[in-house]
Length: 350
Image 1 (cartoon, one colour):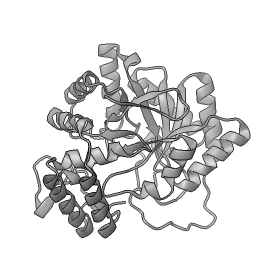
Image 2 (tube, rainbow, N blue to C red):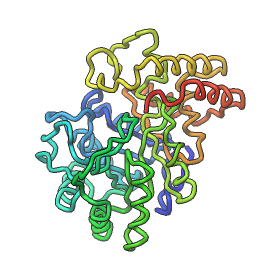
Image 3 (cartoon, one colour):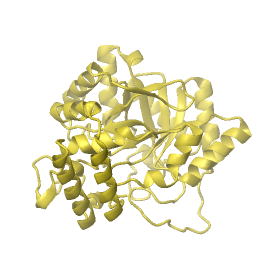
Image 4 (cartoon, rainbow, N blue to C red):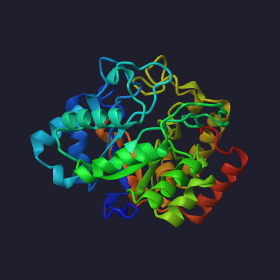
């Protein structure tokens, strides 16, 4: 396993991290424990979860991902062996009152309540990294290309949110803080207020990044470079799309985006443009003597701004293949092929 420093936190995180978004829907508690055991055996130390997981969030299952991690920690007593990250949800604009009765604005009352509940489910007294799952304000994330101009919107200020997070760091409940699904403007504001008020700096940005979505490169990568804020890349396989398993209308049984699954709303991965790009990347992988998974993950892992790629597997076989991608070094011809495809079909799945 390779490890990267996460900003100025002093944390070293594994270049592949274990995501938990499916735990509670596609994966049982037994599955989750088996994945954790295999991941740690292979050198993974970053475990990323969230209060709303599994996703999509439902009243009967929300919080299960954290509970599964917590039961594993209680069973194994391996808290010191992992860098444990979780996230607090932002405003729920499309339902979701089951999460803390809909009280999810990123203000003091709600963040304190969210963290205490997460720590209870995780059966720990601190988090190594606490992240804002998405901004309190309306902006473009979760597949939205255009900036949604909303006049006179009431939202919790970044200064207020950051001040609350500083309290949690001071109390020892959180070691470091990060953002997720954030924009360049938002990152700049967090850095500005941290410097101005002497508050903790964010050390990470958890945003989507894959061969089908390289929008991070357009503005946020420079923050990684010049400010030392590492990318925790989620969906590096674009919900499994980049494995090629959905090409030509295929609907693998049990796959996330198949049929009427809970994940069918993630339509940005099934557009004609996404299918065109995916087919080209699958063909390139074959020409390069690699599996599509190896090509896709090796590319993400090779980017200098990526601190860790968060993989979500539904089986130990998938997890093992994901981890094997660490040994892949893309040739110059493969990298040139990727850039050629990207120039023809850029970012079909933001």
